[in-house]
Image (cartoon, rainbow, N blue to C red; front, side, top):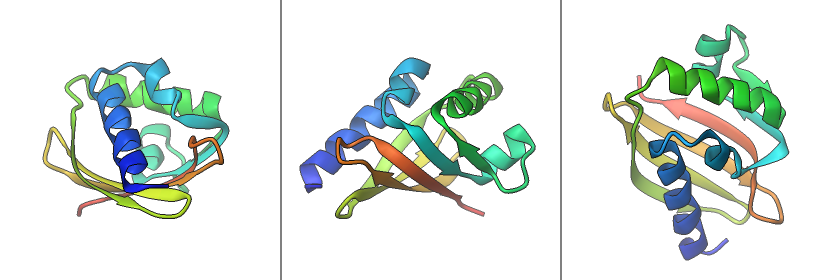
Length: 118
């Protein structure tokens, strides 16, 4: 993944979230997505914070959008790896988030591990 490709993916991902467009958000993910997040643990009541599969991801993201109607992300930085990126952003509350995203051969997200500022 080039730096330009990583930046483009990040900008599209942020724009989809800021538009609160669930279908556009989900278009970035593979069907076999696996996401681990402290926010998922809280919103879904699952101790391991793991969401597996695109339909379960849809449910989680829908709950998040409903719980936080003012949700807005501001992209701070993008780190490019070989087949992965890290998005570093802040939300409307000022919380800092780092999301490691592993990508498939077609550039869709297959695995996410999210981290939040304390």
